[in-house]
Length: 486
Image (cartoon, rainbow, N blue to C red):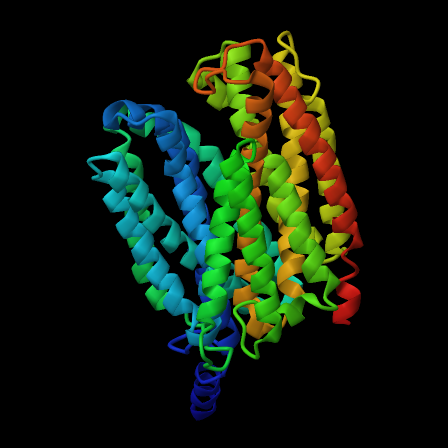
């Protein structure tokens, strides 16, 4: 009997017994990593969801707040501009003072900006509130990918980044439909309220679960001179490029580029610069991956804008039907992004990403031959092709960028990639509007029903296809990543 008790006690006190025994450290870390993946993925869903939902609501905003087309354009542009300008400074500060702190601050600022936008009484308050939105978005952009990358080992990084990218595309997919329903039944203000609610819900979860955040860079003097040159120069470039057909646009663009060149020269001489130029030197993977990202977004972001005009003005679909047709592309991105990211853990990211860009070129060339009798299956087919191309490019390219730098540089790398995305998106819209303006002359772009619209759309897609083809070269030229890590 005593022997039986001894055996029973030994079994009860075995280290791997599951009764009242804490989880092993490895299991606790895995649970923490899953929480980090959840929080950062939800944040990556939030901003594209709100952006795509707001685009549907812009006409209603214009009617209620008496805003013209230019002012409505600034509802979106003010967000992109603020986010792009503050990304690099916030990435640098986050690496020094802690990414978790900036991520949490970003959720607060983003939620406050959303609430202010919801209760805006005029266009000035709305545009200003969207700029606050952009500042909060910059804090989130600059830290989310860095936090996620720090939490997972290199062999799992492509997979989790693929999930994160899929969340972005899921937000783009759901946004137009949800935005239309919210606007129809609860008013456009409800879109901002929903976005603020999501941010507030995420805040306590992030406070508890983001435990893998540590200061990874030494505390140094902040580069205010470089930040000023970068912010003003980038703002002038983003503002001037869409207006490049005018003298003011050319002057703005030229001055902005001059300030950015001066910024690079100043940064090259500083010991602790805002932009560590040394990261670019000898790191072809980082340089060409960011360049490929910029070209990819410049060639693809305006697709929904152009196809929305084509479907509604040329094919005579209503907004609800056009939104349903355009959902094919982001659905493909959502499905295949995690698979592409996982694939890039096993195969060189440059091969997967370059294949994705090449497929994207085919999709863009397909849309360059659109005509007024193009069948619906043709439009959906090339959307599917583009969705597959985007998915194969985005996750592996992000994996390549984040894996090409040291852990203490993750915040900077994430912010640089985000800047490439935002500036590329703005350039894409600028190219589209410039082509439409040049072909249609002084035609009202707010209601472009003239014969030049279809020509403008086809030419824009042709330019984007050629631009993306150039991007394939830079994507492939970046060099091997896995070989460097061995």
